[in-house]
Length: 305
Image (cartoon, rainbow, N blue to C red; front, side, top):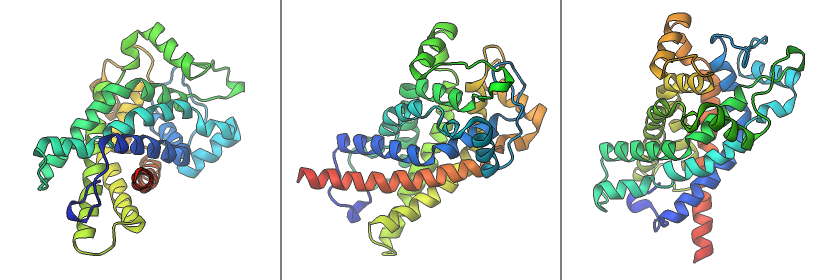
């Protein structure tokens, strides 16, 4: 992120896009089991169907991870990883890598960037990223939600990542690959604004008041705070998005119907299901991603020089 007079020469957009996509993949590799545990906790309690009926109750983050390893094997924690990496290369590269570019676009190159400009830039790149990368998110969520219990007789929905893309397009139409696009746009507009704007502002304040230098401890602190703010604000939309994207055709009439069904059947606390793994995952993801992002940018610029 740019930080005014404290920043070095800003890397070009192509470097930021590459750095963001790569850093997103690194962060996913580190935190993917937490993301999978979050998805399992979020869908727990929804109406049962033959495709994702669950005979196992998950309790807490560690309990979910231990249960999955015991009943489905360690590999289940990384189910959907390939789609997750597809998602980060196409998703993080746009929403994070183009954030500074959009700020400059809205301010016409001015260095005086207000809060509303930052929010607008975050919403814009978040929406752009979802429109581009939604199919990868749908496939990732469905793999993560798929319980693999041999004794349960549940048939696997997909044989692999490419098979999932083809099967969804064939059975549900091309629209199936963009299922949940609107709630995902809403969720990622919120996430992007919370995540990038919080990181941007906190890092800028730390540097402005000379609390730290523009280095790893500063990036770590700003990313930690950004992760908590993002989880607090975005969790309800994230749960609805996960439920709706994982649903079979006809289960819900739309994202709003999914949210209403959750409220009526499970109560308002259902919107914060999986909050702890969400924060552990998003907080750790932010830390790994932003620290890696800053370091990759510097390495690329140093290599070019």
